[in-house]
Structure formats: C-alpha cells, structure tokens
Image (cartoon, rainbow, N blue to C red; front, side, top):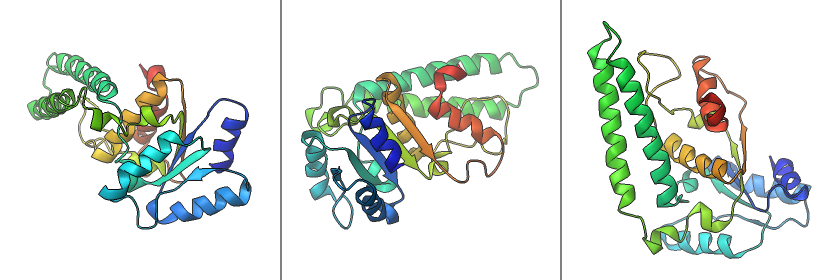
Length: 230
C-alpha cells in the first residue's frame, strides 16, 4: 500500500494519498513508510488518536501541508467528512434506485410483503438522512474539514472486508453477504463516490475478501466499479 501510494505520486497520477488502516497499526504503517521512503512527508494523528480538541487542527494541517500521504485509523476516518453537496448527490441517486426497485417488486406476484415493507423503511431512512444533509448545505464550519478541501485524490483502504455491510434493494431475502448497511460502510461508500467523481484512485487491500458468500464480491464491485455494474 505504501509503495502504491508513492508510485501513484511518482508517475503524476496522485498528489496526496489517504491511507485508512486498523487503529492499532497506524504507527506501524508510519514506520514502514519511512523505512521504504526515507524522505517522505506524511501526516499521522497524535498518540491517542483524534479527540474533539485536536481533530480540527489535524485536518487544517492536512489542508495546508504539501505532503505525500495521510495515515489515519478506521475510527478516525469517520471524522473526515464529504461535502453536503456530494452526500446529496449520492443519497438522491440511492433513493431513485430504491424507487425503481420498489416499482419492480410491486409487480412480482407472490412476493412476501415483508420484503417490500423492509425496503420502504430503508427508503424512508435514506430520505430522512437526505433532509439532515440538506440542513448542512452552506455550513462553513462543516465544510472546513471535508475530504474535498484537504486535496486528497487517492485512497487506500486496509482490511477492506470490514466495510462489506453495504446493503442494496433486492426482492430476494436472506442472502448471505448482503445484509443491512452499516454506518461504517455507508461512510466509505460516500467518500468513494467523491473519488470516482474526480477520477481519483481507490485501492482496497484485504486477505479475506469472501467470508459468507460470493455476493460479497458484488459489494466490493459496488465500491470499486459502480458505473460498470450499472
């Protein structure tokens, strides 16, 4: 992952990479970075992680510094926002997909009504989330520490299988590997849509890609090649 981040920069594809890794190996990743690239310039959260007090200053430094990469843990990753506009675009698209799925489900004879009810509830949650997002449009404090302002144009995610709980509308039920959407997965999905929009680079690293079923490959493709799936 370190070599990939630096190679992307060397060939001019990327200017600043974000490496998202398990919390307990953030320091090890930083050491590995310096052992491979002695003159590299990276930014790592202070010991103890990102508290409310140092979170803003950390991301402000990330904005201002001309560095090779930023390394943060999975838990700190959630504090890095995407703009309200980007979120609005993604959630609107997801609601449209949900509407299309519900239309098809309503025309399937004999389909368990509970499946439709669950999808309606999920759509309502998305609509509520969209309302909350719209309330942040134009909020300067919110937009100050977004991924867009920091200037990151590539992201490399370690142990990517931990983000596999990314549900999708389907008339089928109880499919191993296609459960409900976790906040952790939704957060990553939003951020990757931003990288796709700017033609950035996204790299997943995992040694356990499939643990339940082949359906999990579809989830990974939704992250990495959504347009191709559509």
